Length: 88
Image 1: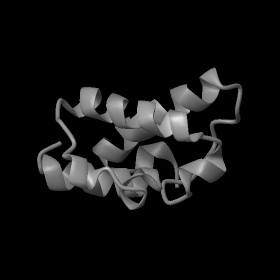
Image 2 (image 1 turned 90 degrees about the vertical axis):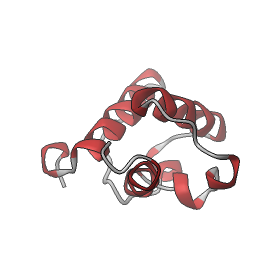
Image 3 (image 1 turned 135 degrees about the vertical axis):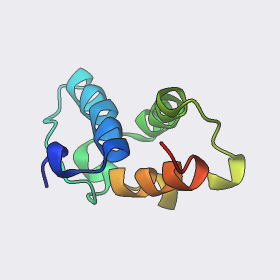
């Protein structure tokens, strides 16, 4: 699925992930439902991704929501953002 076909919030998350992968010298091609670890993000990248998502959507992710399941893929992060800020 191309970024253009994604909901706006997922496209924004894809942009963040793409920048992170590019900085690491990795190919920035991935699917919204692909595990981000498989795309090339490390554990430290995932922490930075969480912080970047908080900044991008101007929200604070509650500690109870910081789980591997919620950050497994762009689609999962999109669902989390939607649950926290339905208009994002």
